[in-house]
Length: 315
Image 1 (cartoon, helix red, strand yellow):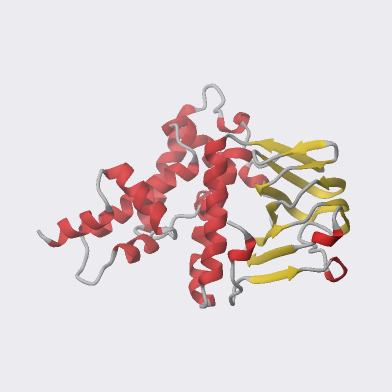
Image 2: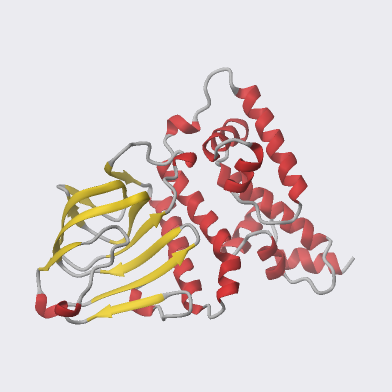
């Protein structure tokens, strides 16, 4: 999805430059100097989306050499490709790779042609999730095609929602469900296998923790489930919860909570009052992308959510 398809809204701002002399770099991951390889055919655009936990920028760049002090003074930064190929600090980076920075890193890059990619800056260092466990520097993580495609689509959907949303309060209500989807996708890449694997003899402890997690979920009832909130309520890190659900159920924390939310939505549809819609039931349980929700619901229960609702009302 090119940036040019997005429109500005009360949530999303758009910047476009057709002249290199007017171009201004964005400091989401630090400023730097750009030298165009073809100044006559210059074009640049970016979409800027501030969220509760950070700042996300999607941009269409130009063929250039970049000399920058890249990264985030606080938190963690990353670059996620959409249509991308470049040489960064001597490393060839393509569509299958995510770049992660901690601290400010001297960076030299060469983009031989225009690229489209996301730049993210999270306010937290995300160590509580087990992400990118190094102190300072720039690291590259290669993703398998399917999870990378899911992650990319989640980001693109988020920007589309922001572009079409004129109600700030409505988008704020979707803010955490959207970010939970993105965090789950990034967990699959940035949490190392050593974190996911339980230590020998720890299964009983993990089973006890998952039982406490289930109790907490039951207490919350039909409300959106967020990994950070649940970890805080159980006085453990998200990283510890990830290891426990993987050890006990063979599922990532994101997959496990998603399954819990699907069952809560089904229960709501099966006991629906006359005014309940599928969309309202999904939103109440933290699902913000209706197409993805319907696909996951059918894969889990063998029927569309609308069929569940119709059957409930025919009883």
